Image (cartoon, rainbow, N blue to C red):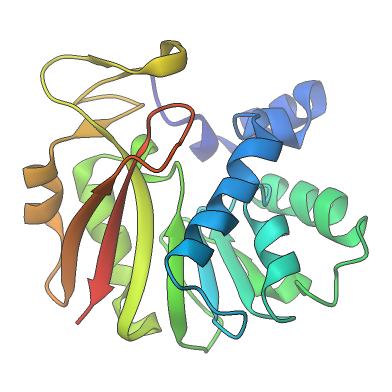
Length: 217
């Protein structure tokens, strides 16, 4: 199985058939607020600048943009269709365009961050579950210039080893195809210089995605 989000034509078809909330995995009213509440528990301030890496259709972006000071949320994603659907249906339709301006969202295939600001917090939910370990490493390397010293990126992964690992809700992860799993040692060793890696683990994700935190030195 290949990463479906890398095929923009397929994404457009899936959006037309199922809608943006289903395309990014559903559980909209569970995982979206869970992201916001987790970051608040980790010390997020309303004045923080937050970068959502792999923001998709803004499942986490909508509650975060509503909670942060206006303009504090930014997002990047590989899919223009997902960003457009999310901003139109979840932000503009809710009257929150002033809280999350459209130019705070950027489409990129290589983790480009063109906003010209420095971030306090980052979030990567259900991103590294779709990437090989070198994709994880590349992403974090690309974030380095854009986070302040002490800035943190919270990210989810599937923990596992061997040919397959079974998780709740029928999810099966693999070492060599999507959805990917990693060991803690693999992630620690692949974390680029300039960042420290720490394992948080369970954070009540309904599909057993585990949380890690990377801190900018």
